[in-house]
Length: 129
Image 1: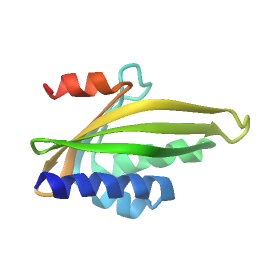
Image 2 (image 1 turned 45 degrees about the vertical axis):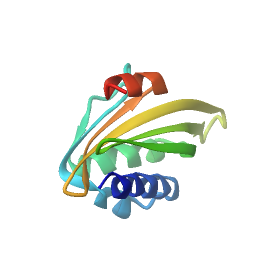
Image 3 (image 1 turned 120 degrees about the horizontal axis):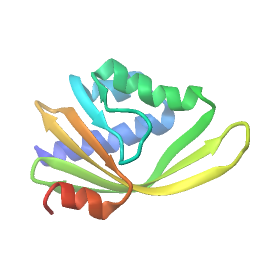
Image 4 (image 1 turned 180 degrees about the horizontal axis):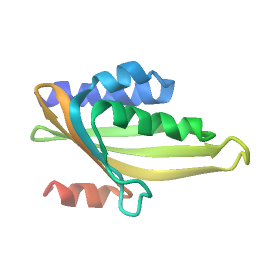
């Protein structure tokens, strides 16, 4: 199942970049939980609707955002991704690119939990790899 899970995460990245929120949300269990990286200003989003709304809010607040150069790994049934997240303010035009990692946990082919990290070593440590 981990290979299928990896493809779900890969497709969710594509949907995020294309702002295909309906399809993006379809990968999440209705009771899924997303945890931001340490120091993230918002607490964990719970539920498919809230998760999609949190990602949409980034765009609606005048921030262009995309992910690129993702490397995906399976660790048991978990999927880990190491990638770059680019955020550009629409008013200022200033951009920042951050190296990030995340871990996804699945049940029944749907994402039930995602945890984001500022660095890859933190993600690996979280899963005991």
